[in-house]
View (cartoon, one colour):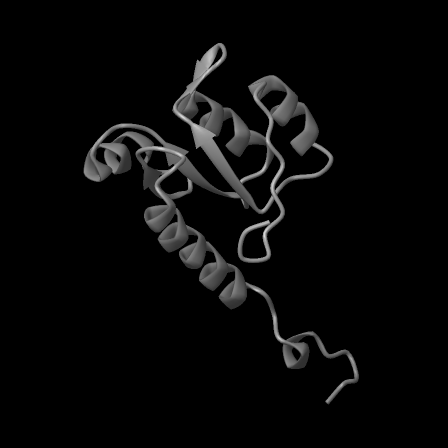
Amino acid sequence: MRKGISVTIESDPQAVLDAVRTNPPDLLIVEDSLSGMTGTQFLSEFLTIDWTTSAILICDEDEEVVHQRTEGLGILGAIRTVDDAQRLDVLIDRFLEMRTFSRPTAAQTSTDGS
């Protein structure tokens, strides 16, 4: 668990796509080279199932190149390796900040009529 986020690791992209139909995650961390498809292809397919999930792409490309290639796929950003803890922390903090702002407050969900 990192920063209160539980992690499930799955190496089969099709298994992930099947699982998210019933239980979509809040955040995906996806390698760009998967078994049978690229990370970009996976994210494109994933978006047809659940467009609310954020993603981080692991790839060895310049951030601007990744942005251009993945525009519209809902990724927060990219890291070059899974061991890039500093960059991963930045992206996870961005995700947590976005999630905090997107959740309604108790006052917004109040049903007492006031």
